[in-house]
Length: 165
Image (cartoon, rainbow, N blue to C red; front, side, top):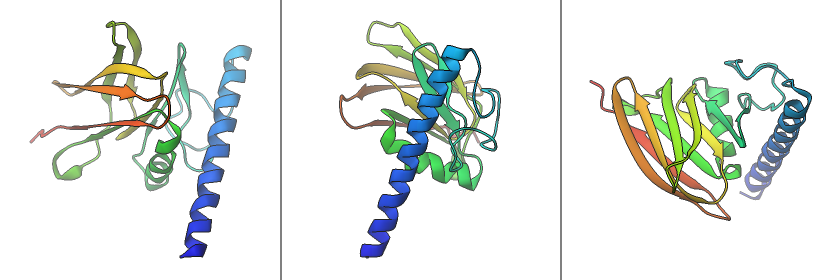
C-alpha cells in the first residue's frame, strides 16, 4: 500500500514536471514564433515536448489546451494530468464510446469568446483563469452546453454524452 502510494506520488510529480516543461516550452515557442517538440498540427504524442504520452499543448490567444486520448497511452496521460488543469472536458457516446472531432467553444460570463477548437479525442484539458464559463460542444449535428465555474484553486469538470444511435 505504501509502495503504491509512493509510486503514485512519483508518477504525479513526473507528470507535473512534464506539464511545467511543456507549458514553459510552449511559452518560449510562442515568443520565438516556433513550436518545440512537434507542431500544433501533430495528432500524436510522439516527438512532442510534453512526454509521458501527453499530446502536444496548443495555444489560442491566452488559452492553452491539450486534447486527445484515443490511444491507451494518451488516454492514461490525460486522465492523470486532469488535476493539473483548471478545466477537464470528456466526450462520450453510446456504450461509453470515446468521441473525437468534437467542436468546442468556450465563452466567458459576458458571452465573449475564450476558445474555439476541435478536440482530437475524448479528453480536452483547458488552462482557463478562474471564473464562470459556458462550454458549447458539438458532435456531428448535435449541440450541448454546460455551465462551469473554474475555481481559483482546484479544477472543474464537464462531461458531454451523445446518444447518436
